[in-house]
Image (cartoon, rainbow, N blue to C red; front, side):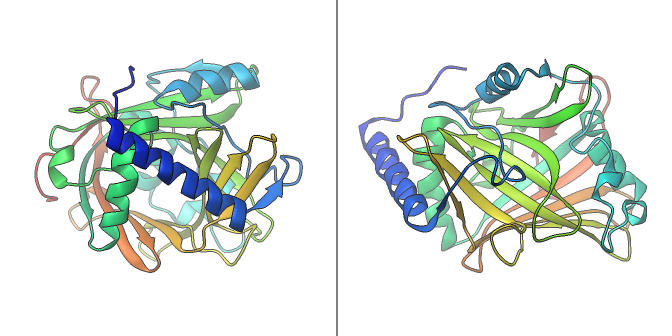
Length: 306
């Protein structure tokens, strides 16, 4: 994928915005090595993201890469999340099937951003996200009207064990990348059960979300980045400096929530909410269904949720 020029004004704003974020990481982060926090480490990106991190990670870690996987899921074995009050068997079978066999599903998606936090989201997306082609969240409902291309990418060790499951999502009309994500599970110091870990490569760093699982009485599955402190669930920003050292900032004010459930008519759905400083920033709603061979992992957004 070729890089689209930003123009001088947005290019300057992107540079200023990146420098401001790096300053915040330097001021509020802590210096860590991979040995000190293996539960947090994940793939870093180069200057430009797009879908390049999958090939770069496979080469760097000696992994076998499968693009456009027709089988496989974000969490190949849902039972790895068991422990401390959470039992995968209590989650509805339809939800577990989606996570274990994500490549076999397709989705419709609708997006909505909320004022006033949407102003900051707009600035972030139209400058930094455009420049590196990563995390280009839809800002208007019509941006998803022509749908999204979505791909499951498998990265396995040479003996066939899953290391990461990539989820690559791109707006079909503009070609902009919404997610270049690496999914895995990990145990963190402040919890006795595994969290779902999603790493989004950024230039010389990444944004990593650690999500704690829970299950409702009706079998709905929830993921939340709510956590107590460093070493718990939460949103972490990692950045490698010019000295080669990596600083990590846990952003307490940024939260993500997911609920994956079966509605009253038997349709599988997902609600995804992002909040900053307690304010709603972005809401995504997905309708999920088994795919045919022609529509597998096709993601559309043609109309209101039904």
